[in-house]
Amino acid sequence: MIRAYYEIAKSQVKLDFAYGAWFWSSMVSSILQMLVLFYFWRAVYANGPSELHGYKLDDMITYMVVASMIGGYTNGAGGKLAEDIRGGLVAIELMRPYDQLSKLVALDLGGKFGYFLRNTVPILVLAFLFFHINLPPSWGAAAMFPLSTALGVLIGAQFDLLVGIMAFYTVNIWGLRVLRDAVLLFFTGQLVPVMLFPEWLQSVNRFLPFQSMVYVPVSIYTGALRGAEAWVQVGIQAAWLLGVFLLVRWTWSRAMRKVTIFGG
Image 1 (spheres, rainbow, N blue to C red):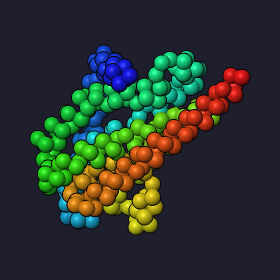
Image 2 (tube, rainbow, N blue to C red):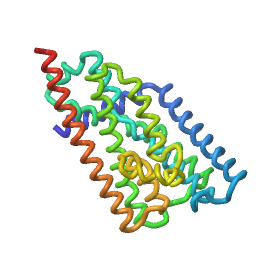
Image 3 (cartoon, rainbow, N blue to C red):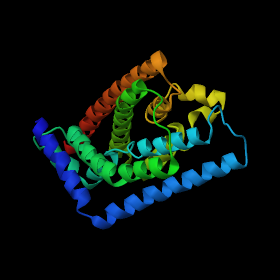
């Protein structure tokens, strides 16, 4: 069965690379976004304090570049699931010999591999050659960063599936997805670093899964989280991943009862 999901993921990679215009336009869009961020924060520091909450200009540029790269992976297959539900294809998918949610995750992973090649690689080249972003402060941070990033990406993917399942109840989730994008852009720390939030908002955000998607892995990369504190946050990420995964499965099982009732 794992082999089948691997082939599904590979088919998504081939599909992404089949459209050259989309490939190049996406790459150019990501590069332009990085340039906007770079010149924005350079202007902020040129006309303001030399440090913001202990972050100098190179630290902030490093944070924003890494956060933007990770933030591009927080989307998932929720949109595809919602389309299947709205178009009635979900009924056909349920009769096929695989778990639909696992199939959607496989498609999403394939899409993320394509995103890595067309978006992340060019940004990394630009960031290290022209922006001169910092490397992780230690080998421990460099080793922990991929683990924390993977957990954050998986949390985002499961959260997106949860939004997609809402199509069983609302039919059209366009508004929910707009709200989701706005919430993630802000509360994950992708748009503004979490340490710049008011203290009360930081306290609220600690009880939500969003900062585990972006802020935690970026903080590990920059060295803002290190040692035992970093491992505690990775453990919290793992707990959030399990919690969101179980919530998705529970919500999916409830939605399946709704499909059965309508079919009966």
